[in-house]
Image (cartoon, rainbow, N blue to C red; front, side, top):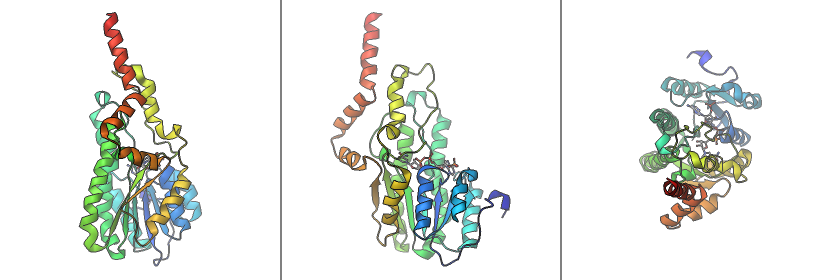
Length: 294
Ligand SMILES: NC(=O)c1ccc[n+]([C@@H]2O[C@H](COP(=O)([O-])OP(=O)(O)OC[C@H]3O[C@@H](n4cnc5c(N)ncnc54)[C@H](OP(=O)(O)O)[C@@H]3O)[C@@H](O)[C@H]2O)c1
């Protein structure tokens, strides 16, 4: 294995230690999960592209590794390192993710594809590479999903569909892996205080330019609603994962219960709320007024 592909910070960890791999651990939720699993006694491998952002984790004794979930070689290097270092994997936390918040009419297909590459195909690749190790330990695969997989937040069609695909992938995977006693858990994550929001500008000719504020409020929805701190999130979630019989789905993050409740409401009602909240009704009346004045 090319050593320069990996962080310099790893050191040998005892092979009897329960082991977790957390992807997307250079910031936000992933970093907090890596720390919390470490506190709970796991040998933690924390992976992300920006290894330098994980120096705080390596200072704690967590093994930080260069990992791009869209790159097969990078994934194989990490799995090989785990085999060498602890020889076991008990928890795979597929947490790496990226946002894509644009109206469909403004969307570039390559942006949609790169969002799916991380949020969906990346998860498949990492999972396939990790399954043989998880089979040995009867381990657990945890997917960082989103409330967006369930509720139709406007301007998030690509992110939402990547997370919806992840959710159903996991539901099927759970049944397929049951004979091998590998568990699959999906986190339905609501607002957590991170910097994941899309910041790319709308094109000047966007149909939605008049309600840029509405799009902005969608993009900063998590940040604007007293989001849960990642450390608090991790402290709530990790005990529910490492218990002997974790639930299939765990809702967590600020307002998770409220959004769960909303998901039970008739869909026309949910759509109406979002239509007004994200200023699409305003855009409609603006368009009508403009036509009148012509
Ligand atoms: N924050 C929320 O309110 C919220 C709500 C619902 C779901 N989520 C989900 O929570 C997860 C974590 O997001 P976050 O909110 O903590 O945002 P974040 O701080 O932006 O974290 C995203 C992480 O994913 C990593 N990542 C992105 N592309 C990657 C790639 N190709 N290979 C490996 N790692 C990659 C990033 O690391 P590098 O850039 O260093 O690679 C970073 O560590 C995501 O799956 C997100 O969809 C978050």
